[in-house]
Length: 175
Ligand SMILES: [Zn+2]
Image (tube, rainbow, N blue to C red; front, side, top):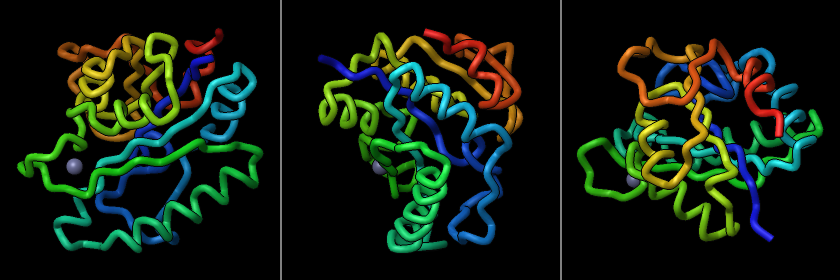
């Protein structure tokens, strides 16, 4: 048995992206996230969060801050009957030679190996072209770019779909 998974970027997809977010008080869920995730569960998808967190290497916050916020966020998902299978993050700066920072596919491939994920049947939802590129490099063709985070260059996007917010992904992901 292989696992089909919805990979979610965090900032700009799950919560409003304010830049280098690490305080619980500053975390604001985007409208419709919980409904969308419950829909994914009904279709038997696992949900994994994949996030670049260069604020750690930049010294704006530390890994403990990240984990504390993540624990709180996962509690909110739990309270809404959603189980997040796992979370992966890259703490490095952009010019550091790691394999994890998107657009590199390292975090996605690590998840694939850890959970035996069928990438052909999986999806990536991100708010940056780097999310789409990482997904493509990891063998995920089902990609959705949301406009809820940064402004995006839609005409040059490789994303399969572009929508306003994760809330609309329910109409695209239906099997
Ligand atoms: Zn990294």
